[in-house]
Amino acid sequence: MARTVLIDAGFGNLHSAEKAFQRMARETDGGEIVVSGTAEDIAAADRLVLPGDGAFPACMRALRGPLEEALREAVEQRAIPFLGICIGMQLMAREGHEYETVPGLGWIDGHVVKIEPSEPALTVPHMGWNDLVIERPHPLLDGIATGDHAYFVHSYHMAMDRDGERLAHVDHGGDITAIVAKDNAAGMQFHPEKSQEAGLRLIANFLGWAP
Image 1 (cartoon, helix red, strand yellow):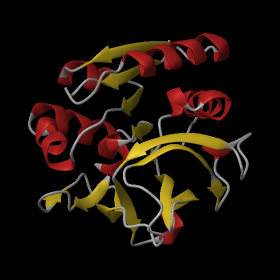
Image 2 (cartoon, one colour):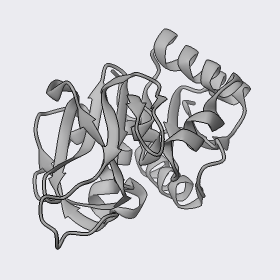
Image 3 (tube, helix red, strand yellow):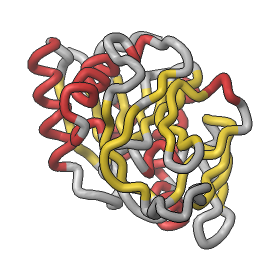
Image 4 (cartoon, one colour):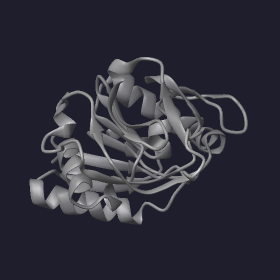
């Protein structure tokens, strides 16, 4: 049975994400869902999910050491499917510029910067529902269309240096990167576990993704 590990690196309550992944695993015969913060479980996983909330520097530092080593070996060497959610997606970038410049995992060619809407009436953080704009097809987007809603809560976003790695964006006084993917690694800025039908479909797609 395939095992999906939700990585508990100490930067977020994973309860709602765990419940959503467990539900879709049951509905799709998607295997076992485990929450763990150990390098051993990461090394033994068939799929990895990095959810969470928080500031880029603190979250990246929380990963340093055995967790990052096990994560890189799994994703870069064994090429198992990886999904970053919210800050987990941001950490996939080359670097983040929240309070200070900190190197990220470097899996997506982008950098994380503060949201600066072009319209003064639009608030930061970018919080609430927004419509996805699909830019290119991908197995993770099966059954997802432009106009589907996703739930966001964030003040920083990934500015892309390579457009081909962005699958979808939303508009909030300018483009906000919503979904990225490269090879066996993908990320979602929004919370799929809070995004109702579209979010559950994306989780199901990930559990069946075979890059």
